[in-house]
Length: 411
Image 1 (spheres, rainbow, N blue to C red):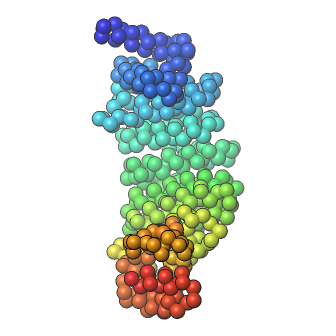
Image 2: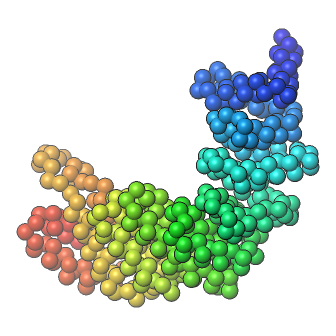
């Protein structure tokens, strides 16, 4: 029975990888289907083709990325190709190394060709992810010399009107900087003008400028802080800030622009000294974001997180934030004001626990933690004279919310 089943599977595999496209389309459909039975059979067949004939399987998936096929099939093929070539838990890129040199060369050509012509954003993202993972393994040994010229061409060719291709090219550079930063540090000299031009070009789609910001920040973190290469990035910071503020000024772009704050928080954790030269401008701009009631709460919370992260970086940047006494006062006031976002819920009167959350909001919960971190990071000498003055005013205010905020902050 087992031998019959094995022979049946072999026959199915040969049909799927054969010249007739229908069995292969059925295999792809089974992967798309949510049926547990079909999903199990498709996964089993995937593993079998991966082990028995990875060359034919990889080439078939790559061939089906072409525009002549149904979009849903093409998208699933992009996912499966990524999984086939890069998802090996037991051995890094094991399947790729099992492919013939001819197949490897063909796959690399097809992926870059599809990136340059593809119109599906989903497929472009999958290809970018696959390319970056393969490149992280191949570039240190100079086994993909065509990649960098291709990416530079995508970013420099004025006739390239495909914003999404530029986005994906920056995305690949950013992921490579995260994975093999030391290997691609020499690219900085060529990339710097591309970063600068992109960040200062407000005619480009916002996602392109955000991808450039992400890539630049990844490079900053893989370059030694005291090296000359780090200086290449200082003139990029105004463009990064402008990308953030431009995105937040457009209502439907706020969710996208918020990614810049995530990247800034990461940079503040790992390389806070990068902000030192332009600290006043950066802190002022992000404080404006944190105080802007027209923005979504999540955006304002991330702005607060960035500021607190810089304050907490005292060991790596001793005294940096303490040199901004106006910031300390402004930040403390901002945190107190966010504590006012609380409701006088009748259930409070029956609360049995002093830590009952009745009436509290997300603003209140976020700031409750940030205020403690802010106070501990700065220390009593830096914050006490500012706190006493403001807390006295709040404690004497007729508004119960201010008195409540003063008591909590005092504690």
